[in-house]
Image (cartoon, rainbow over all chains, first blue to last red; front, side, top):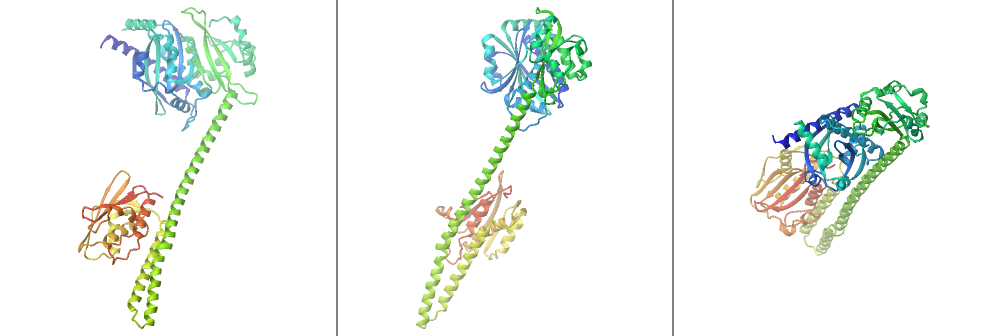
Length: 199
Length: 387
């Protein structure tokens, strides 16, 4: 196994533990059984992500973003297709609506909480395992074209993206989403060093 | 956010409920909005554990996440749709308040390594918003149901219009038949009767002409009977059933009183689910035509079967004169007859009945040249019964 593969392996482990914690928190909150799985992770430049996404750049998505700073800084995002996001909320809240409504303020708050749980767990696990000090802002919800979800980050940061394809299973119905952690270059070098130390 | 308890009083001026707890989960501050929301005064609650005052917060779904705020320093959100309320409060209308709650860590210092000393809870009253959201959701569902209902009505009206158009076309055909096809033999009879009258006056034997009148009357009666059958078709109350096509075709052959010079062969036939009377009528007409118009000393008829995803496909081939390509559409029009065999009495209604039955069942019928040299009728019958 190469060093890069070893690092990717460690990242996968960190993400999976975080996702597992998030799943147990969500399961305590809702009546339905929810399972989360991260079948694939990749480290990419922001430009490269479009080659690895099953999403179109103009596709309407719901994004929950969590800015973080400290030993590492950047932004973590949960990205869901708008239609699927609405279905997820309907299932979590037990509405079981066959044709879910658009995302209103109430639904967007629910998605923000789901994003809050997932992203806190993932980043919290980075912090625990790599022994980093990270603080987070309040998560923000946006509904827009996918390309716009990255536009502000692209301007500010020279970015390395940790892209995690995520599967949600609620009452055995599957949904796909993305968890993305965007690091600026210097933060990524720091992360790389932390990972190196742990190998 | 750093902890400076002396500055908590600023929270009193916020239009949201705010309270602060320390690491022991004891309440350190309770703002004026929360006093209004909950009816609990600050002096009744400050210094007490939130778990004593609000025991439901002891459950893991709250406690673990509040602990997380102290451990990881990340803010936590409790949304209205998932939790309803964080602390029970009543609205002015007496309903349980719908709340969205944000828990934010408060550190001893802004510097890195600063310990989370307290957690600030801000509780927003979303009761009105929830009502509005539910109202619009309900209105939207009603509108969606109305649109669906209208769509169904429109589809129903379109189907009725289509039927009406079909009936109008049939009515046109009827007018045509009555005005032309039925008048012609009547005029013919009238003409012969005039000849008979003249012959009687001149003492000539009229028996041959009377035979001619009788033949024309029989033809006219046949035509009228066929016409009535065609008109009645589809109006009878019949129900679908399983049909062993091998049996059905053999029954049809038997009923047709086929002469000895006709050889009929069947390939393996399926069992289908459909309207027996209609299927029988179709095969009686098509096989009957092959017999009627056969012009060879031995008439050969071959019935074959295959299927595709949606259709049973039957073919009836013969070694008769065949149908010229230019007439292959017209033969299904009412009262069209090729009349290739002068001695054959044809009402010209049979194949139009066949077409009408098959099309109304959602199938199709066409004609081609058979390998035997005659006509090949291709009958496509839907596997799923059309009601």
